[in-house]
Amino acid sequence: MNNTRRKALRGLLEQLEDLRDQVQEYLDEEEEYRDNMPENLQNSERYEAAEQAADSLASAVDDIENAICGIEEAIE
Image 1: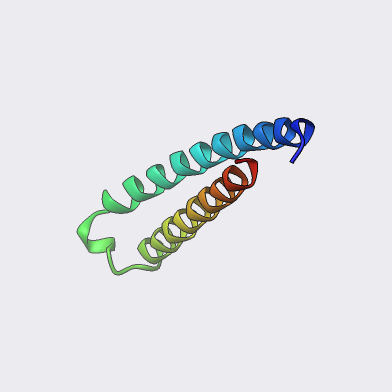
Image 2 (image 1 turned 90 degrees about the vertical axis):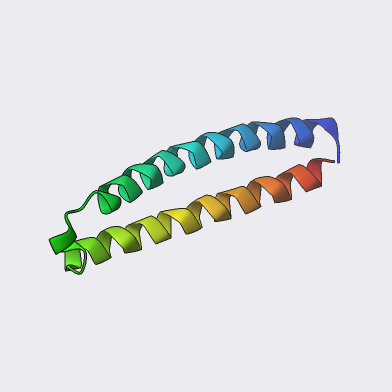
């Protein structure tokens, strides 16, 4: 791989890392929201929606992390 492509991919890595961090912040907020729900709402649709959102955001963080790893491997 030439230096021009490596440089471009490093720029993408920075963007992906920023994106991962932003999604992680939303995940943390959603988990906190879910975890602080009153006990009487823990079997409600609202709780289930928060849990699904947290699961989806966790998957997104994992997927972004996989993309980062793949690009890092390509650059080496």
